[in-house]
Length: 72
Image (tube, rainbow, N blue to C red; front, side, top):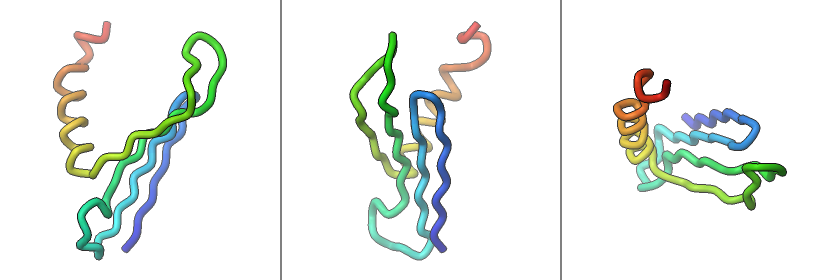
């Protein structure tokens, strides 16, 4: 079964692609892409792709170090 989910913000596109039947390494990925923008945070368009396993490590890191107390 193939699953593609996307979320877009003003500056980024997030896409998860999963294929539960694929056995090939790298068939389950998370891609973070930038949107072209103008102004203070402008950047050229680029993207970063990682495996779902790597995305889980990133999620754990962000959850651990970006708790509510640290953000405020």
